[in-house]
Amino acid sequence: MSYPEFAAEDRRKNRAIARGVQKFVGVPTGGQRTSFRLAVADDAGDRELDYRLIKEVWTFHENRIAVRFAYEWHDDGGYWFRSYGNENWEFDEHGLMRLRIASINDVPIKESERKYRWPLGRRPDDHPSLSDLGL
Image 1 (cartoon, one colour):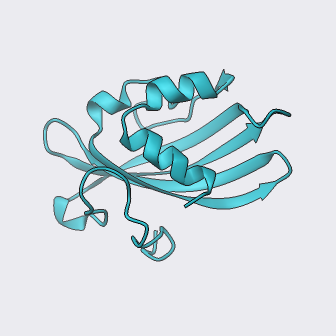
Image 2: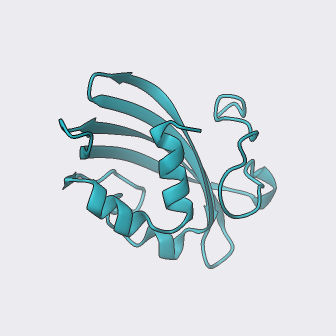
Image 3: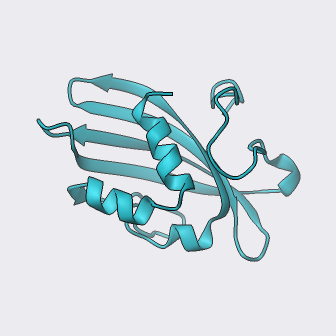
């Protein structure tokens, strides 16, 4: 697991996203959510409980990468969601991310519809990908 999306999965699951992304991203441009909140520096970690994420590289060229992702979480009321999205990343000449643009859509799901059931923490290396899961 050496692609950037796996490092992003690990950072998010460690709840370091607010600190890590703010330090890593030079120009935070938000993604639209159903609640129209900023995708980069928000309080998602406080609302999105038992969060599990899978990302896949969609394409890349020179200093740009596009990834797609889906993650499952529940709120403090026990309602489950699957959030789907795309991210575009642009890196500077030093390899640091200078731009991140994200678009995310939250879809309510039943607990029985969950596809990510590994224990909290890092996604197991042998867990099916988004494509393998038909997402």
